[in-house]
Image (cartoon, rainbow, N blue to C red; front, side, top):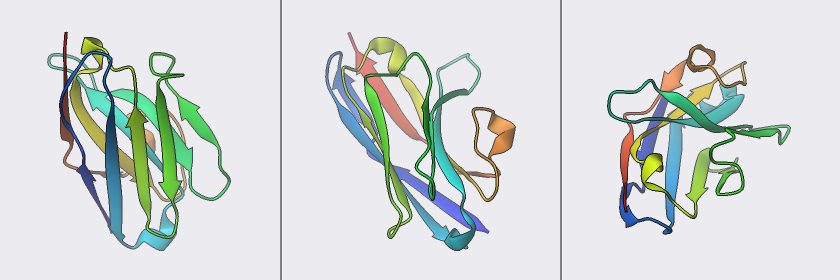
Length: 123
């Protein structure tokens, strides 16, 4: 099993920045990819960004491309999401996700999920 723990959420004004962290524990040697999803009130959980831990491939949703950066520390089994130029529409609960053999944009491609961290961007 893999456990994921997010941190770093909070309240920020539009145009500001936040950095989210996701630390993996447990059977971390199996992890193939890690990513971030978010869910705004009343909306479906949506893909934000993801990266393959071994081969460096990264992927971003169009809505965050150029503003968000996903990075990783393989030794620490930690993934970060640097969020710059935040907009009110970025508000939501941000979830970290991981999988042991898949990499993609769909929720069902990730078998492990964190509890989520709230990000609120005020206008």
